[in-house]
Length: 331
Image 1 (cartoon, one colour):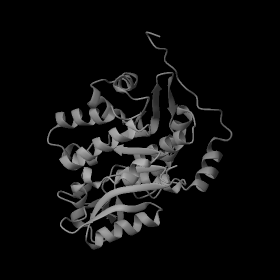
Image 2 (cartoon, one colour; image 1 turned 180 degrees about the horizontal axis):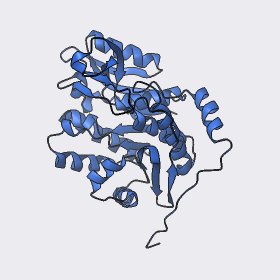
Image 3 (tube, helix red, strand yellow; image 1 turned 30 degrees about the horizontal axis):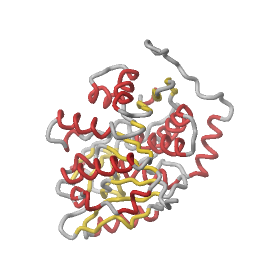
Image 4 (cartoon, one colour; image 1 turned 180 degrees about the vertical axis):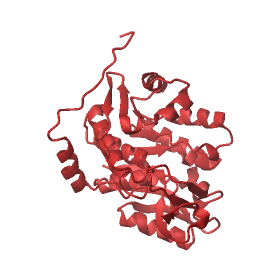
């Protein structure tokens, strides 16, 4: 039996968050944190009690040390984070948005240590993990990181492990939109659970309706698809059923960054605990709603005890998820 519940990989950057709102050029004080969609999900799953191995690279610099220290404090197994003496740790600047709008983010990651991830970074021990979570960000960083993404997803699926995939599109990192669409869809075809946002799904598949987007990925080899609909909740579809799960109302949105990562944490954790797909989406919606109520990318992700208390309190008096079902035309 593997000691690793979940393997996740990608780039964790240092992040400097503005202490004041307004143009980043005018801000004089920043707070240092970490950022990275892949590591946000890894942290969220670690907080829920899973043993998560993190595969990455950082520079031989103070920001790299800060990243590793922070991840280890969150419980991640960082033994497979390489220290790169030739390339720096990536970082970003993030504005403060007090009106609930998306913050401005400026990236400084080109040529970073993480962009030099490659197939050679894969240690055999990592392939014993029970589950692999992947996103579309590492394959956008470089050709070698893309090759590693394909290798990991292919080998884990062939070994009978479950694989989840969040497209997490970053168009500015790709050479062209068409290349991005082609490669992301090739990767999605290697996953059991595909988790796109609605706008991502529309771009990647050419379909508008969530049911058609989900059907596209089911036809490519996915077992289930959950499509994020923002505050409206999510639509899910498997080969057996489908439906909409309503979103969780939020009184005040503080920071929208990380909501999708929270959704992935809810989906993966619930499915690995053998909950139904509808129940997994309900948990995913709740964690996503919690994420937007905290400043920072991963600060709002709950611990297991927090989820046990708050999630149960939120839904204890409510019936099981209400699903709006659509009958298959060719059933």
